[in-house]
Amino acid sequence: MNKLSQLFALIGFGLKSLPARKGSAAAAIFGIAGVVAVLVGVLSIGEGFQRVMVVAGSPDSVVVLRGGADSEMSSVLSRGDADILAEAPGVARANGKALVSPELFVVIDLPKRSTGTSANVPLRGVKQEAFLLRPEVKIVDGRTFEWGRNEVIVGRSAQSQFGNTDVGTELKLGQNTWKVVGIFEANGAISESEVWADAEVVAPAYRRGNSFNVAQVRLASAGNFEPFKDALTKDPRVNLRIQRETEYYAGQSRALRGLVTGLAFVVCTLMGLGALFGALNTMYTAVSARAREIATLEALGFGGFAVMLSVLVEALLLALIGGVAGATLAYLAFDGYKAATLNWQTFSQVAFSFDVTPQLMISAIEYALVIGLLGGLFPAIRAARMPVAVALREG
Image 1 (cartoon, rainbow, N blue to C red):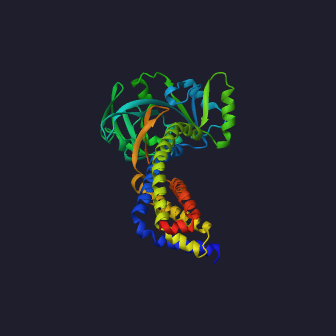
Image 2: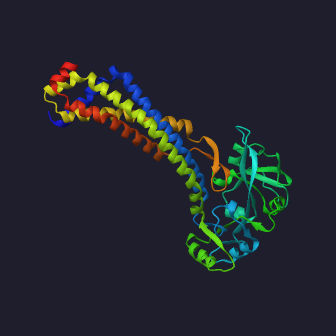
Image 3: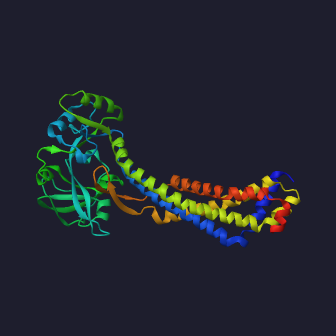
């Protein structure tokens, strides 16, 4: 009998004996499934947060902050800066107007719907150009605010997470009372976590004078970024930090994703060790229970290498079942789950949905297979090296 046939025969014998060891096999499967479910669940937080940021970015859009600032919270721009941006080369135009949107960024307090505790929510003061730069923003309930009035519109994600944001609600913000007149969506982008109002009304309410925090600029094409940046870098009238929108939001998501990844590594390493010991126990038990069977097969001419591989295949199969079960459970439990977390750059809440991606599930299953491989390796070596006479006595 050739080695391949021996291997298939041994794998078949091992699988047929699984019902006799269903208790230990089930323990290994459930242990690995638990590790995978936790791993996928934790990492889906980072994936969901990053997706919100990636959706917001456009290669032909630019975020302009004051030189040295790393977020809208720490940036201050003047109206003069906005006028200079409008004159820069490569800026797109619509109806004769440069697509430059100077905006205010204010953090307001709103209660969380789930707990009632206070949360920092972004209030963005915008001009009409903001809607041209973000065509994905669509009113889905109510209407948009009227310019010059104390009215706001609320992103769908913010409305689902924070109280006092339904259409018709009145909010006390700054020195004035504001009325919520509409809910908007933006294809799931970070804008949906914000409250929008007329910048000319927000400015006096928060004593911002003639200043802004950030300017959004739409370029005629993505290739105009370098000429646009070079012209402003060389202009002695301004001191600006200029980034592609995609780069800016990627930087904002980096801190949270790093934190989540680190947490997942620590938690799943500890849980993985437990699952690993469970797999070791299962496979050692399997080898001991099949000692006489293995010895008989070896006496009939089955090679030790085939015996070792059969034990490894059984361990990998249990790990695969546990990995698929855990990934599926995580998908059903977490994918699309809505939550809000702190944006460490602006210290304001960002609403997002957990995102269990196919790549994340595949990576978690691969992690399960690594546990299965390590858990089956030493029992497999023991089975291959066990002397026939000893195995017969143990059996």
